[in-house]
Image (cartoon, rainbow over all chains, first blue to last red; front, side, top):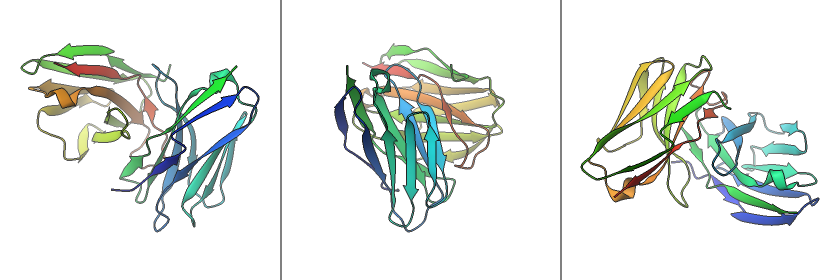
Length: 111
Length: 114
């Protein structure tokens, strides 16, 4: 079992603030990492798939970085809006076949 | 809309009942997945199908029985469940089996076992 950890567990920010959270995974072997956004009562929605050390990906106000040597990925949200409120999940794989999810970071953006 | 539809959205069943969860994808994907989400726990992968063949079964109790009759449909047959099986069950699909492929999720079935 791969130990994928996300921090913080939950986060409250004011509208307009920028924020970031972390996904940690064992750095010994790395295949790929996914970030998902999961709004309450909806389907998890893929944000990014990251495979290369040093990858930076961006989608609107959301961006992510990957450091496979030290075993972490950061997700950044610039100028948070209430509609960004969701749980952000990451999942990591060492082999491409087995993959494991973290418990998520729950973000609440206060208007 | 993700292109992955799960029914029913909510299900309440007794421990002696038999019920089935259904998942349908309209994306032309070759791989389909069942996940279990229990409170305060990570998403747990239960079963993986690729081109209608089961390729992964992560030590799931036999009271959960998957079926993949074609690449667009996936079922999870439930019988003699326990209260601890109450959870959100998510279905997902992807173009291919390898983890570089994005997974598209359904909205889930919230199951309560009484």
